[in-house]
Structures are given as structure tokens and as C-alpha cells.
Length: 326
Image 1 (cartoon, rainbow, N blue to C red):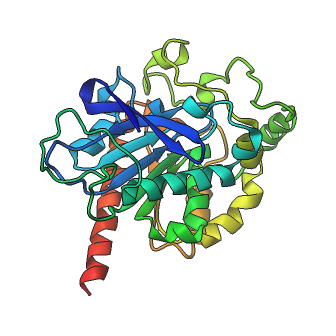
Image 2 (image 1 turned 90 degrees about the horizontal axis):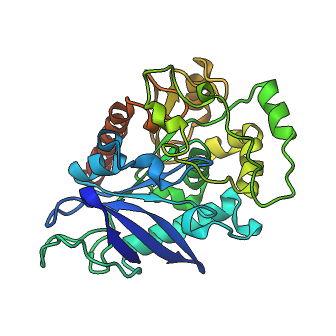
């Protein structure tokens, strides 16, 4: 793992997994504090790890908030993004991405990856989940957005997902409008990346003016990256594939719908369908986040959303502790 320090205790990191480097951002609790767990943050399509932490918006950072509350937070660039951009198409699909992230979690939580210490770490302090000297595996909670949320649900449906502490997903496309399906069908799928169309209208991914920083709509402020074609094909089919996936998810699930979601249908039937479909999950909590569009964590209400996610993760810790005590 390569580490370079950024202001605010957030570090650039890189992990060698299955012959490729996965880049990301990592924030850890204060030196000497044993993390409550590892929060793995998975971005959506067309963005990167910086979706969860922008230098100019510390109040909306999931990484800074999670670390302040005692978690180690790793926002990973999914396979095909960041350092692994250009990954061959056979390794871009969501199943292949799930394999890579399971391998990352396994090596992080068992201490199989080399890790550079935090510059402020006190020798002899409590271990970090990325520390090879960590004596015990820490619980892993996954928070994911949009395409990344579809990936997280696939992980939760895998038998290895049973060991995850829980999932917090948002922006999951259970349904598409006919117009959206027609738009997807018009995308040529022979290339490695989805062709850029110059960007969708702001209201497709954001709430009303005033609910987000308008700089996000400029080239300087946007958190964007090309979408690998294989994952686009997978997510385009998600309304057909998700019912089977959801029926097999076993971890606890926190499912959020944005009040101003416009990238896919999001009426009250969506949370109801999610609760009905997640019949094997340990527990299911649905919530409509007010004051946001699809890109929840890029809105002014991001901190409120992240606090709810972390509260749910804490409840999952309590549930595990309770079951262990019995």
C-alpha cells in the first residue's frame, strides 16, 4: 500500500489486488484509538472516491465524519476507475468488481496487506484494520451509491456477504422509465467506456438550486470519471437482475431514496418494494432523505445523510454484540 498524507487526516492510498492497483482515500481515528470497524465506501458510476470526500467541503465528508466517530473509512476507486482505469473489459463487470472488493476486504481485515503507518500514530497504540499487526478482524460495513450500491447488494447476496456488518445503499435503480430505457438502448456498447454526451441536465442528479454547491456543475467542481462499459451493461439490466439479488441479501440494509431523485422512478412504492424484496436481510430500514437529488453526498444535506448511515452502522454493532452475549 502506498500512502501520501492529505490535509484533514485523509490519505491517498493504493492497494495491489489480483494484479491491479486499486486507489482510494483513507481516514482513520485519532492515534491510539482502536477503530470501531472498517467503513468501505463505494462510489457510483462516473465518479471516484472523492464523491465521499471533497477537499472544499469538509462538512460533507463521510471520511472525516466517520473517523471522528471512531471508524476507519476507506473510499475505494472501484475497478476500472482511478489507478485501475483502463482495466480490461472482462474485469470491469460488477461480478468481477465484487471479487476484487472481497479480496481487498479479506486482505485488509486479516492484515495481509502492507500498510504505512499514519504519521501521527503513537507507537504501541491500538491497531488499525489496515495494520498488519492488528490482532483481530474488525467488522466491515459497506456504504454505497448508485452503480456502487448495485455492486454492494451483489456482495450482500454472496455467501461471503453474510459476514458483513451491514449495507447502506442509496440511488438503487429498481425501475427505469421508458425514456431512460430508450436512452440506454441508444448507447453503443462496443467500446471500453460509455461515450460522453456532455453531461445530463443538472436536475437529473441534483436537487433544486440551493441544495448543492453550483460549482459542482463546472469542470473544476465536478467529481467525474469515464464509466467502464461492462458495468454500464450490468446496471442497465439491474431492474431485471436485482429481484434475484435482493432475495439473497443477508446483511442488515439501510436503503435511502433521495427526495428529488430524477434519474429513475422513486415514488413511495420503491421503499416498499425494497422491504418486500429483502426478505432474508437481518433487518431493513428505509428512509427518504430530504433536500437532495440522486447524488446525495454532494448536497448540503450530506452530513445529515452520513450521520444516519453511521447511526445504522452503530445499531448493527449493537446487534452483533447482543447476539454474541446471548
